[in-house]
Length: 397
Ligand code: FEO
Image (tube, rainbow, N blue to C red):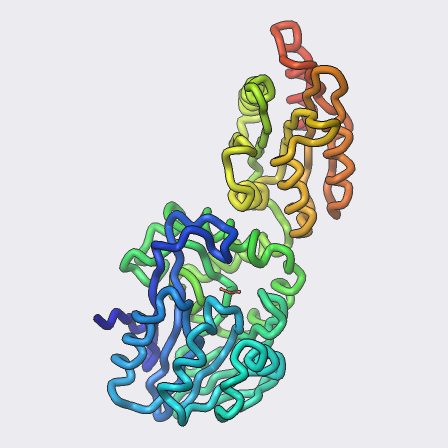
């Protein structure tokens, strides 16, 4: 059955959600699923903006043919060539052989790599600032390299003031009937997932996101149509501000995230005592996570949210506890900046995790690492209360 929504004059969302998916990119757990958005413009000419993932292909193709209602498809505009959006290009081109694929030079290089059999399909190559008219609507192309791949483009429609923003402004999470963000409790149901999506998928490319945000600032945007998650037609400034902060690596909150690894519970116990002291002394929100239990993508989302990060690690094989080591590796790969770190190490005979975590964190730019390390020998006891108190005071300061 066709399941579509209208997002603006002549513009229809024809995407679908996948709730069966376990791991997005075969990497990130998505308990709430994910949506793959595709948009169809029914103007004097018809234009499809991106296809969808193979997992929702049946629904997507039914939506496409049902919305076209027997009309031909004139254009397939490819804003992003990652397979979660391009997987159906070959099928769409076979179903609508008269169409013209619209993309930039990099789009067509990737199209040839993924689908060489589309070489005979008509093509229209566009560059930054060029336009495509479908009649009443004129779409302006804005290149957005590395948000999240090099070929990514945005398209801006003059007539409806709609920005088709590719992966930008997207989020994990299936759509629960509400397509528009204002039809959902976005802050409660999607914001954590939007942050996790941003930090893990696009987080490395903050500079490029900033560049495209500057370009977009010159446009009168009334609606944002991303490739994942809700469409924005209200409170756009609120969400753009989140993106601005995230891409400047600026903490969203003055909160503290405390992440610990613990083999037998002693470091966990110390982390709990430290968290209580931090909360009591600062009044700031403190969130505590077990690095072995929480997926690194969630931890990275939390680190993107908070200004202060406390890492507590046992010493393991004369190194850092392995899940903590993996988290530090991810942070370096994503190029996190501008955070304050405090370190707690545990070691029964030779604690070195603090020194080694510091060496990893020193690879990050614009981060402050507290000089004092709280060293635990096996376990904390009542006699250590004063030490914990002083350490908590130093973290807060
Ligand atoms: Fe949703 Fe970069 O693909």
